[in-house]
Amino acid sequence: MRASSSCLAFATFYGLVLAANGVFMLAAPMAWYETVPGVPTTGPFNQHFLRDIGLIFLLLGGAVLVGVLRPAMRIVLWGAVTLWLTGHAFFHVWEVLAGICAPSALARDFPAVSLPAIIAAALVVWAECGLASAKKRPSLT
Image 1 (cartoon, rainbow, N blue to C red):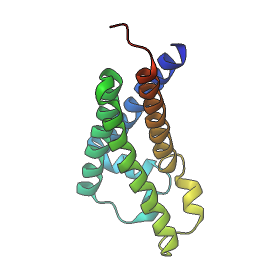
Image 2: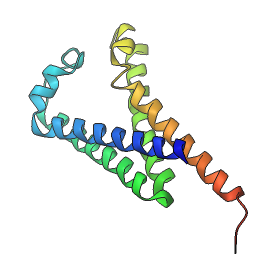
Image 3: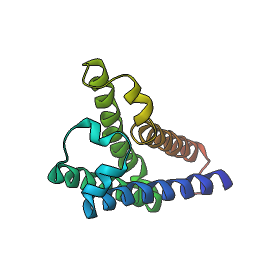
Image 4: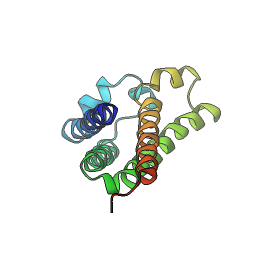
């Protein structure tokens, strides 16, 4: 039970971080653009685009938090979060393979691009293992 509580506490923190990033992007897109390492090298500032992505991050954080509160929806919600974040990470890899960015961009972007996808995937695996283990428990009815 303790590991379960720790994972849910971490998922709560993770969801809040994703949502906070989204709020930052929505509320202060220029500050976000200038503050996050490597972002200015990806192209010119585009307020509309940054706010679109900010809304996505706010929704991703919300999906993680709803998954914390609603175990029956956890795998679907966290799976959707993982799908988007993994697609985002693969897009960054494609940019390197296409010659748009230098390979060093992968290391620079890892904490903000690849790591969130890895964390989301790990949470889905944890949730799936918990669901599988719950199904194996004998029923008292």
